[in-house]
Image (cartoon, rainbow, N blue to C red):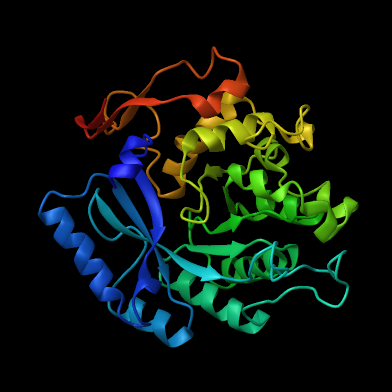
Length: 329
């Protein structure tokens, strides 16, 4: 939490259930409630709940848990599911063989039937789902499951999300808008991924991957994040990569897939209003105005006035949570 507020972060979605053996999630919930009771929470927590088996999810819901349960400082968030692995390890599940290893399409964690049932159970129980999908195959399965759940058990404003949204094709990009699926993106991932994407998935699929601008322009809600501790949770690195489409060393000079660059305003919105929307908070945070939480950050430079390549070097001077200074130089 000290590191988060130093980086100017006032709320996080975090997946902590797997820190303990399966089924011991109550200890995680109790720990956060105790921290809150003792006044030790420095950031707001929206807990992603990794409940990867049907019996565990049903037990959780039967105990009365639901998305939004809790207080302004700690709330139960979405059902978290890991639908595939990583691009680097070729375990991200593609809808076609890997370009540099045609013997594999990656590894789907669930069958379509299992994924359908989990997401329908969450939908019926009033719980949004946030599904880790790096490969287009995993994302297609998840989109199918979400659409089936929406048809079988309609509920207003259940903000199901796909986490990462890295390898996508044109049809998938259109599905985000059609089904109103939220996109959790981690722009700083391109610092590691630019050198390997085309080798892994081929030139054609690369052109429709990491397509943040396409999602933005089609009306999809985008939430900026980091996937820490996989990479650093620096917001400035994320905004820099979203705006420049460059690695942190400045390569390539013109930006990678430069037509997918976000404007500074769009990138800042993803890390403020986008994050607020992803946790049902847009009415109380994400912008600074009367009636909202006084959660804000003071930077040492104006992001809208400097050269975009300087953004990654911007420092946080002060972080304010609910009107109280929680970090200051």
